[in-house]
Amino acid sequence: MSLPTALIKPGEADRLIAGHPWVYGNSIFRLTAPAKDGDVVQVKDHRQRFIGVGFYNSRSKIAIRLLDRERTDFGASFFRERIAAALALRRKHMPQATSFRVVNAESDFLSGLIVDKYEDVLVLQTSSLGMDKRKHLIVAALLELFQPTAIVERNDMGSRKFEGLHESNAVLHGEAPAEFTVQMNGLTFRVPAGGGHKTGLYLDQQVNYARVAELSQGAEVLDCFSYLGGFALHCARAGAKNVTGLDQSEEAVKAARTIAEANGVTEGLSYDTTNVFDWLREKTVTGPNERLIPRYDVVVLDPPSFTRTRAAVDGALRGYKEIHLRALKLLKTGGTLATFCCSHHVDARLFEDVIVAAAADAHVMLRRVRSFSQSPDHPIVPAIPETEYLKGFAYEVVR
Image (cartoon, rainbow, N blue to C red; front, side, top):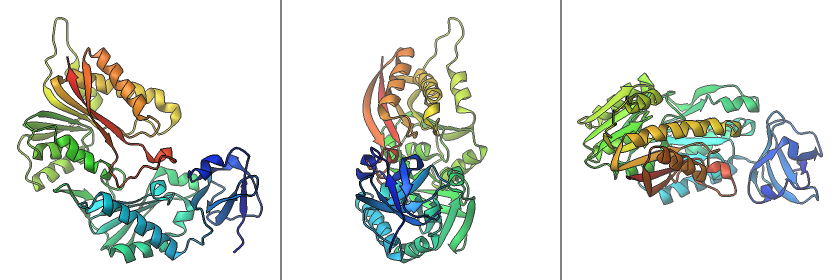
């Protein structure tokens, strides 16, 4: 099969040869033949050396998403084999998990495709035109590998517009469930179908929920940006004395209370609907000659991303410093701060620098006791920096 060839400008091929799948439009010297958006093209460097094949889209900043170093037609067998390999990786590193991310786009060498498994229901997202045109092949592979009761398409991401795609939410197989039931670390979460963040739940924190809970036995815990109560519920189950969850979404707080009741974990666990920034500020403001008495043994900070662009990093860092400064003022000596950042544009070193600066302003010293990353169902490929986005740390407060 003869494919249109995209010739890459000198100096632009090294990153692709190392394994990064994105070919930007301004990296292409020329196409040797016309290519339709969504079709397969092959990529060569300026010396005509073959690099790989992928999906083309002239309307996207990412003009080509490379998927294979060999020439392939991207038929049914390709998707079946690639998804099977992704599933095998999860079973190897998360053998007890029954809900997890099956395909994590670039992490699984399927740029533009995400598949989440919520027990026997699969949720699919396609963020590239090439993947979107092949949904029928992807669904066929998922049916063969999982035999799910339902496959739900949740394509409401804003990024689709950059590929010339419209929002699309539909049931691709079976009947639409009213909610997803998720088993996670021995706890049951019920997530309304079509609601919530991401595809419904933060599967990337699955391992971290349990690791943070280990630090909370007998503790007074504050869980900021609690969403459905992932950290709060795990800490309460682990034996925390009291746990308070904060989130500005009334819908999320209501769901978190329902989830806690369904798990029989309600004693000492409460949720407040509030703006977390305002709440932290109110609790840490003191008047003349007043002294703030720290109340909490554990504070968890797991905010949504403060920036999705490199240009907004400075503003995001100010926001991170603000919440850390306030949180540290509420922690007792010997208490633990468990904190997370889910922005790819703020790396672990920069994130920790902000925390250290906040500690200096709060006049406390921190001892790092744990480091966190995204759960293994969100693999990190070092050659693709965008695959590493979630980072976190646990610190003990040392006066």
